[in-house]
Amino acid sequence: MEETIHITVEDQHGEVRQLEIPDGINLSLMEVLKASEYPILATCGGMALCATCHVQVLAGQEKLEPRTEAELDMLDTLPDADDHSRLSCQIRLTASLDGLKIRVSGNN
Ligand code: FES
Image 1: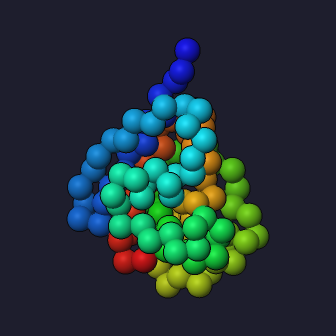
Image 2 (image 1 turned 45 degrees about the vertical axis):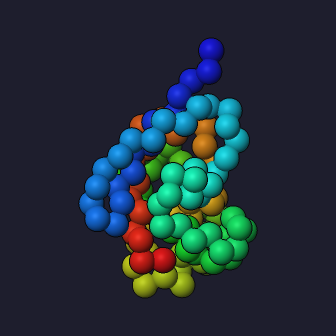
């Protein structure tokens, strides 16, 4: 049976919404956020080269793969990045991410 991935997203105004994403969709978190009309520019198209897809993980960080060197280098260029920062284009949506909570900073 197909599972549903629940991702809680807080936007730049503090509004919280839960996204329900079918497992097996094979998209990145960036692609889903863009499709859900969050202010994610993603100018590099998901290549870890622009950092405009920056999000902060509020809960469930342990569900995610560690950040790669390329992701860390890109996050280093952001003044507001911290230990909870991720590039959402580098996060593949899988059922194991169910329950993740993130914040879209909106000043990308
Ligand atoms: S879309 Fe450019 S770094 Fe993620």
